[in-house]
Length: 63
Image (cartoon, rainbow, N blue to C red; front, side):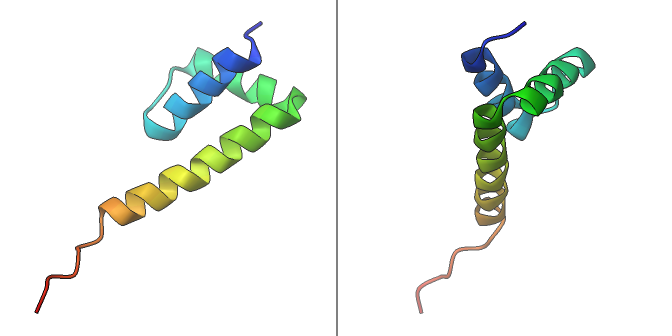
């Protein structure tokens, strides 16, 4: 069983890259049992989405 610290690292990676099936299972099982890690993961997903959207926008050029 992974610690919350290990799960938070895995959750961060999962938001940015594809993780293995075994890691996905470990993450999901832990998130079902741990409210704090679930909140961390949910917040990370939102932050990743915002950063990706920002990265894909074109900056306004000065006129």
